[in-house]
Image (tube, rainbow, N blue to C red):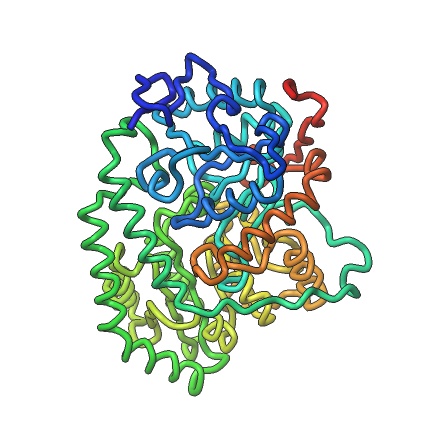
Length: 476
C-alpha cells in the first residue's frame, strides 16, 4: 500500500499531495462509446456506509456516463473500494483540505457524495466544496427505516434542507409513488458488514497512520462488545418481549418513552447541545420522579447498536431506586420502538430519527437537541439548554400533540425531497438503490447549485448560506 496527503507515495493507487495529480491521470476507464474519461463528468465519492454500496454506486454512475473517484481514509474503506478509480488518503484534515482544494480547481468534479456529514474529513470536504461551488450529496441512515435511505443536498439531520425548505403549494394533493418494502434481516447485514469493516480498518491502520476516524474503537474491544451485544439480545429477549406486550395491552396511554441513541453517534455529538445518554437518563428520571403522574410509567428504549457498548440497564435501575420510582421505570433494548411509541403518551429524545415515529403516530414529542423536525407545530424544542429542565418537567404534565396537517405536509415533503426507497445493506436491493441515487443526481443536480445550506453559529440561530454559482468554478 502507498499513501497520499503529504506522506510518502509507495504505490500506483496513491496520490501524493505535492504533485496535485489530477483524476484523469489516475483513472483510465473508458466509456461504452470508447471515449476517454476526460470527456465525462467526475463524481467524487468519499466514505460510504459500511459494505459494498459505494462500490455498487460507482458502477451505476459509470453506466450512466459519469467517471468516479473513490477516496479511502482507512482499511475498512479500502476493503469495499479499491483498484482502478480509488485512491487512499493518509494525512491530517488540513492536508486533506489542501489536496481537495487543488483537486477541485483542476478537475472540477460535478458533485461530491458522502455518508455522514459530521465525520471529520467530511466536514472539511463540505466546507471546501461550499467555498468552491461544488454541490455535496449527503447520505445517512434513513429517516424512515428500513425501507428508505436519506439522501440530501448539503447535509442531513440538523443540517438537513428540511429545516429551511417549506413544502411547496399543492404538495399535499400529489400522491406519493408506491414504495418497495425492504425484506431481510437488516441488523444482521449491518453487523456482518460492520465487523468486516472494523477488522480490516484495524489491520490497515499502519498504512493510514495519523488519520482521524469518527469512532475510535479498538478491534479487540469491538469484537468483545459486539459479542456482548448478541448475548444481551438473546438473554433479554423473553423479558423484552413480555414487557412490550404488557405495556401495549395493559398500560396503553399510561407511559412515556425515552429514546436513547448510540453514545458516539456524530449527530448526537455535533448537534446534541452537549447532551449525553447518561445525562438524558439522569435528568428524565429525576424530573419524572418529581413531576409525573404517579400512575404513569417511564420506558427507556436502548438503541440496539449500542446494546453491547453501554450498560444502561443497571444505571437506569440504580438511579430509579435512588429517586424512589423503580417500580415505574422500565428498560427495553430490543423490539419495535414504533409500536412502543404508538401506544405511549409521548416521546423524549435528543435528536433521534425516532422522533418521526412520534409525529407519524400523532404523539407529543420533546426534542432536546438540534434536529430537522424541530419546527413549530411538530415538536417541543427548548430554545436553549438552560430551559431544558423546565421543558422536561412540563412535558409530563402538558404534552402537546403535533398538528396533524403540519405533520402531513412535513412528512410528504420529506419523502419527496430527502428519502430514496432502498437499502444500503440488504444485498438484494443495493443495485436498485444505487440506480435510484443516480436518477436523483441527474434530476436534481442543476437546482443544487443554488441550494441553501444550514450553518450553525449558535444552537438557537440558523444562518442561511447561498452556495456559489457553478460559474465560479475553475477547470473544465
